[in-house]
Image 1 (cartoon, one colour):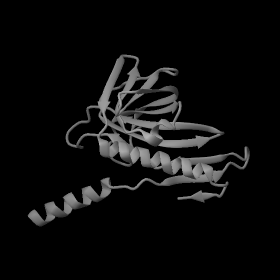
Image 2 (spheres, rainbow, N blue to C red):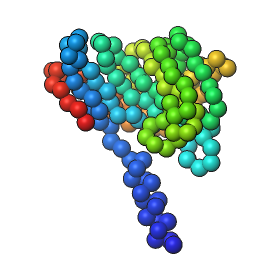
Image 3 (spheres, one colour):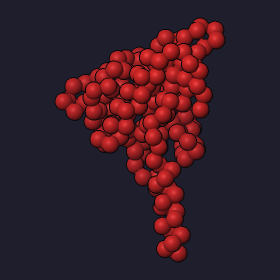
Image 4 (cartoon, rainbow, N blue to C red):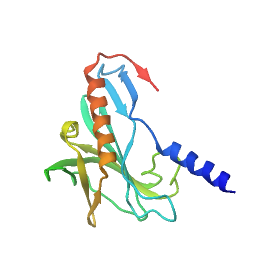
Amino acid sequence: MKKNLLLLLLLMLSLSIQAQSIKVSKTDKFTKDKVVYTSYEKISSEAFIGTQTGKNIAICFGRENGLNMILMKWLTADARLVSVNSKVVFLDEEDNTHEFTVSDYASGRGEGTVGALGMDLWGLRILLLGDLSVFKNHIMTAVRIYTTDGYYDYKIRKSAAEKAREAYRLFEKEIQKGNLDKWK
C-alpha cells in the first residue's frame, strides 16, 4: 500500500514539473508575421483536493498579427467575469505595479484549465495587452485581477515567478529569430 501511494505521489509530482518551452513558432501564411506561443506557466496555485477556490492561474506569452500578449487561464470555483478594458495588475519585487488591459476573454466550464484537471470547473481565459518586457528583469510577487464584482489579489511564489520570467526570456529570444517554422 505504501509503495503504491509513493508511486502515485511521484507520478503526480512528475506531471507538475514542466520546463518552459516554445509551443508554436511559425510564419502566418497570410500575413507573413511570426506567430509564437510559449507553454503555460502556473503562477498561482493550490492543491487539487476538494474544490478550487480560485487560486489556480497560469500564463503564457504569445505573439500573433504583430501583437505581443499574455494569455491567462484562471480556474475558479465560482462564475467570475471580467470586462474588456478592465485591468490585471502585476506587482514586482520592488512594489512597482505593471498594468495590463483585458482585450478579450472567455468564461465557462473548463475555460481556465491547463491540461485535463478541472475541466468541469468554472474558469476564465483572458487575453492581456501591455508591456510584456517587464517580465524580463523583474520577479512578480502578486497579481490583482479586476472583475465585475471587484478585484481579487493572489500571491505569486518566487519559484513560479522565476519560471514566468524564464518563459518570457525564451519568448523574446524566439521572436528575435528568423521566421523558421516549428510546431510541437
